[in-house]
Image 1 (tube, rainbow, N blue to C red):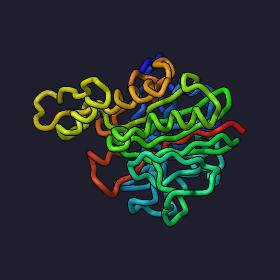
Image 2: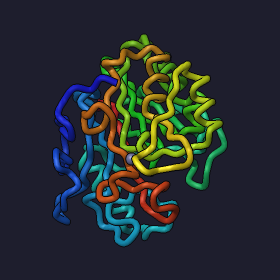
Image 3: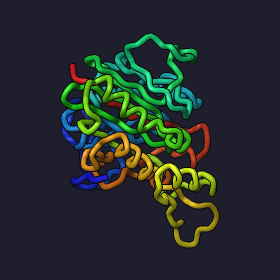
Length: 295
Ligand SMILES: [Zn+2]
């Protein structure tokens, strides 16, 4: 990835966003609103990667939990979703999400579901795209990699959920190629940003997973553990996702990261800023990453 810019910097965007700038992770006033990270590679398109800061949930869900699925109070989640929508700049009812299943299906937000749906009518898929106007697309994560994709010229956008299973099966490449085809664009015209997720510093996996990624990419994606650590190898899923985007045809310079550092923040390393399933287990909050097509 090449993502010039200031670490922790935040791009311009509408809404009352409390920007997570350099030094984010410090206490944020309760009335500051949802704290989101942005990626300048996405330009003027409204978007945001949520942190856990600036919401109303308490305990293990404190405070900006966007997920209704892991046991938090419904009223708190609804308020948090309103805050995120205000920070990014979309009407909450325009948000489209999918039932994420670690697969490779990509759905069009405007198309009637052809895939199995959950109780809320959401199709089972791990990427959702649109070429329609004024639509917000989101994916939930708490360690997996959220990827926001866009074709800036047409305004077509896509949100992707990439854990190691989905990434190994090709969800990232497939989402990029599908978006390009629907937008009538060359894949090289797309831009993409990776959001907060578990980094190679923390992501222990089995030896067979490392081998599968090495075979897929022709490059060793195993990284050394922290000093004093033992056990399983660590996988650089960020690099794997970037390689998949490049494989689809994106230029390396068109691939950025939330916060505009060279790589996104690691969810497991930063308990003050992010929920992490690997760190805290189930019954925690989840981040929500959203991109909005132009009106
Ligand atoms: Zn880490």
